View 1 (cartoon, rainbow, N blue to C red):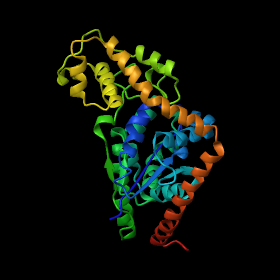
View 2: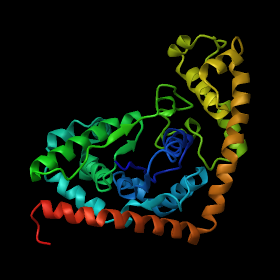
View 3: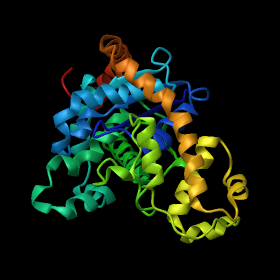
View 4: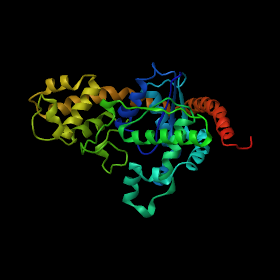
Length: 333
């Protein structure tokens, strides 16, 4: 069976190393083992938080540039913008007609976000999972690389696929499998080791953006929250030290070492030394990517050409599938 992955990032705020390490690097590790790869900039999902639409065009181009600068070849793979493929929203509507409201109301992300301001909770946030299901199932994706916090959405996608198959009485959709790369699935905030690194965090010092210059990276790591205790060489001791665990995990990733080797390197030392070495390792890794992103953004016509090529490939794949879907619903063709 041909393997195919579909994944994407919302173009909201500044893309940061949590997005890069937790998502993009995971995708890159699969490029040689998956037959066909589709990487989307999910601009329609970004509209669920209306304040993010102001810089949507700029952020969309920046995400596309980040994909390419990180190592995703836009010629060998398909990089495209969600709104450039009409099948996403069409299929989302079909799914909304067979998805019980109870399934959507149980989604953790909806409950978390809607609880903060119920009067300002928009319908788009509630039906967000049906659009995500459409993103995946329109392409007959066999695998979906996601963070741990998105696993529930893939499980719902499988439920929706099965419900649709049952409704039409034939197997239109295969059930995709989530792929979660454990060691980098959750990159935590530099200000709170119990919170995931997020674009929406009020503190800019909680995250390192892919477009941060070297001095800014150094400053953010120096200001990162830690504790006063020296570093233990025992992994289990990190469980009650979330900030320490986060910085040591980042150092392991950027130096391509395992956590055991990192603990041995820093055992008995204070975090001033960890921060110094982590800052250097982060700068060395991220600087070439930042420079490539800027180069791509300065050549917007080429970047848009890549996105157009990706959209053409995406549309050519989903148009026949959408015909099959409409036919299964007994629609006039």
